Image 1: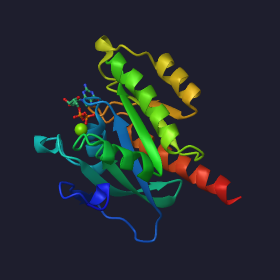
Image 2: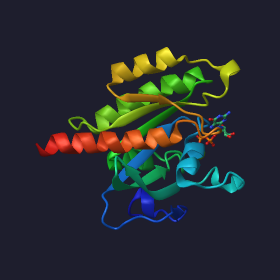
Image 3: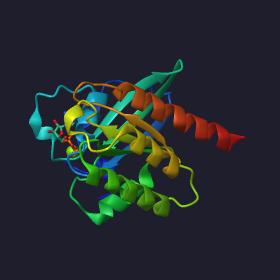
Image 4: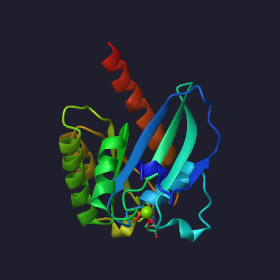
Length: 193
Ligand code: GDP
Ligand code: MG
C-alpha cells in the first residue's frame, strides 16, 4: 500500500479543478464524533442523505478561489480510517496544512485537540505548518462545554488560527477553508523570501 490517498476504500470526489492551480493537501484531525466527516462533506459539496460515508475514510478534491486566485485542496478525512498507527503517522507527515477539530459540546475532545497539536509538532519539528483549530457544533448552544474564549486562548498557546463552525448549519465552513488557503500562501511566500 503506497500512501493514504491510494487506499482502496477511498473515494475521490472531484468537483472540477484547473490543472494549473497549486494543489494543497489538507488533513483533518480530531476525536471520533466531533464532525470531521460532516465538515469534509460540506466542503466537498456532498449531500447529507447518504449515511454510508461515515466510517470509511474519504478524500475530497476541490478547487477554491481565494483573493481572486485559484487553488486546489485535497482534503483527507482518513484519520480514523482503520485506526492504524501507521496510517496516523502518515497523516502527520503528509499534510501541507492541518485542521484540528473538537466539538464545543465535548470537553474531552478539546483536550484531545491539544494532544494532537503536540503530536503534530513532534512529527514535523522544525516546519512551520499552518494549523487551524476548529470548534465545531457551535449550533448546539445549550450543551456547550467549551467557550469561545477557551478555544481562542488555546489557539494562541498553540500558535495557530481558530474558528468555530457548525457543519450542520454550514456556518463558517467556507471561511475555514479560505483561511487554510490564505495561511498556506502566507507561509509559502515567507519561505520564498
Ligand atoms: P467524525 O467522527 O469526526 O467524522 O464526526 P461526524 O462528522 O461523523 O459527526 C458525528 C456526529 O455529529 C454526527 O451525528 C453528525 O451529524 C453530528 N454533527 C457533526 N457536525 C455537527 C454540527 O456542526 N452540529 C451538530 N448539531 N451536529 C453535528
Ligand atoms: Mg468521520
